[in-house]
Each structure stands twice: as structure tokens, then as C-alpha cells.
Amino acid sequence: MGKGIVDELKKEFDIEDIWLPLEIHPDTPEEGKELTAMFPKSRLEAMTTNLKNYGSQFGLVFNQLSLLSNSHLSLLAGEFARDNGKFHQYHETAFKAYFTYGKDIGKVEVIYNILEELGLDINSFSSEVKAGTYEGKLQETSESAQLNGINSTPTFIINNKYAVVGAQPVEAFKKALLEMENESL
Image (cartoon, rainbow, N blue to C red; front, side, top):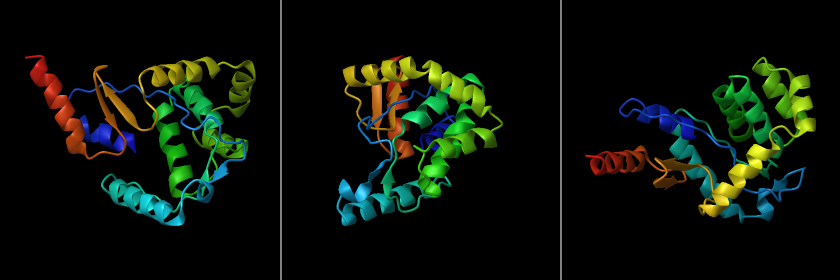
């Protein structure tokens, strides 16, 4: 979702975006967790309606979600994709797999399919996971987020000063960017 906003803002502002992996629910079991165990049905429906309405502005399709996936493996795969020059493609494909098609991005076969679709070597990825190559990055980002009071995604930090949290309208970002520009004058 964030990429649509960033792409829109890049039309008016000179932006360099750096995406960091953040596991919001590290306690999610490996098999995931049914969202109905976390939220009442009416709240889930309202959340989905909000996502659908917001996403439609950027051509994003959200379907009714039923499972909170354990995102750990998906985040590791994102870092592997970053190292192989395909982070944004991976992010977009994993996002669609989960939010549009309802796939469990905590399952190894789903992640492997995404990586293969992008032309990335799943044997290399598997070796990197076994070696713990990306665990430090996830831990570092988690600790930094905790120190800075970040507990949801997306959270956008602008110039290490302004935070825009959640799915906000483009105007919220423009306001923060314009305030930052005015302060530098």
C-alpha cells in the first residue's frame, strides 16, 4: 500500500524511500492465526471495507482477510530480494498474494512461488535463511521501532523527524513534506 503513496508523492517531491522489515506480530504461530479470534466479525468487515476504499485510489485490490500470517519468512525473503535487486517487485507480489489472493505468506511454498516468479533462486534463499543472514536486520529494525514507539505498519518516517502512521490520505504526507520544506527555509 505504501508504494502507491510514495510513487504518487514522487511526482511532486524529491523522495528517496528506504523500506525496512518490521514484524508487527512476532508471536503469531507458524501456522498463522484466524483473524476472527482477534477481532469481532463486524470489525473485520469494517477494516476490509476501509482497505478496499483506500486501496482503490491506487489500483490496489483487497479481499476479505481471514488469516493473520506469520510474516517472519516473508520479511526474510524481502531482504533476500533486496540483496538481489528485486525488493519492490517482491514487496508488490507478496502484498498481492496476501491481501488480494488470500494466500498465507507464512508458508514456505507460497514464499518460494513468489521468489521463483521473480526469477530468484530458492536454493540460495534457503541457504541464507539457514545461515541466519537476515535475522540481524529484522532484529535491528524491531529494536529501533520499539525504541521509537512504532508498533504498526505502514509507518513512514520523514527525515527522521515526522511520522505518518497507517493508511493515510496523500494529503497527510504532503502536509508533512511541506512543513519540512518550510522549516528548512
